[in-house]
Image 1 (cartoon, rainbow over the protein chains, first blue to last red):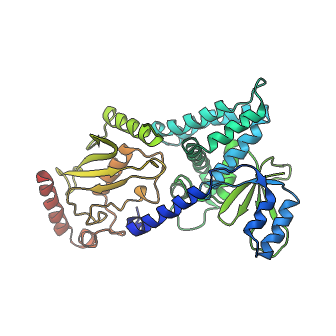
Image 2: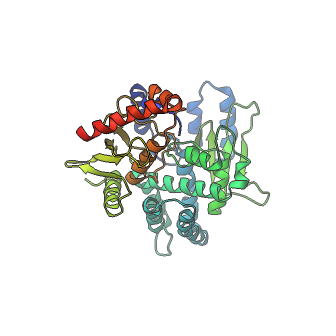
Length: 261
Length: 151
């Protein structure tokens, strides 16, 4: 147990709330698909970034902006993974099975069944609603997914459940993942309790590796930062030569968005 | 109007009634499910024994994504309780998880009474006495226990 006097400072809390409110008003949880060139507007006076936007534009044509609330990785990853699976029925079935089996695993790892039920039921409800079928128009299903992910109640509970799956995977293979934990944590469990399970906490490589391993999914992350090279660097998770992820995210310092070719 | 926070609080309440943990109780106030009153009984074999300590728990519509605000209403003398009753407890701050429910919150506060953490004091005097003069610490705690009968 440790001190967190910041949370006791009412002025700070008030300021935090105002910032949150501003972000919520400014950003949808997930935006429509927009042309990638829109990034140029953000970097009008920034030659380093403009050059990188040019490089990204040669590989990706569209993007979706995700609300920058600290949950952006899980929201972006969850959305674009399901978007891909809706168009790939067989893989959707496998993904569904993995989610179905995940609850028992979490209970085995001592997560309280009483509370995880809610989050599990919500993600299953969404999976059921967007399950591809021969009779339904794919575009309608994709619209439904977009709607559900923009409804705070659904969207946030999915983020919670993806966080729990990530935490579960890290704990399950604690010995392996402890090697990658840097910073002031007393144990891998301590890391999970501070950096994985709480909402609004940002994600790093280790979170992405764990969630991909847990769900049997792959993702390409394109990194755009201040580095001097003119090309952006892409990193595939999991990192193996025969992996060619079908979904891509754009990373800019502390934030993830979705990319489309 | 039913929202995820309100639905979840109804479930929390039902669970607390059906499967009440030892030594804690809590219920929503009559006209507002977002504000609860709770009682923690001082744990056995601690200076808090026999005390009945009252608390309020205030939830927002962001519960359980965000923790509630929990405060002691009864006067407390404890290294991790502020003068205004606010509680310095990691699971209510940087280790909050949406998997915690009211039952888990109350039992965590109960164990904080048994095991104070004097290294992150909210009440410097209580922390110092806890470390250096346990007799005086216990005397001051027992005064709160007496006070809790009257409140």
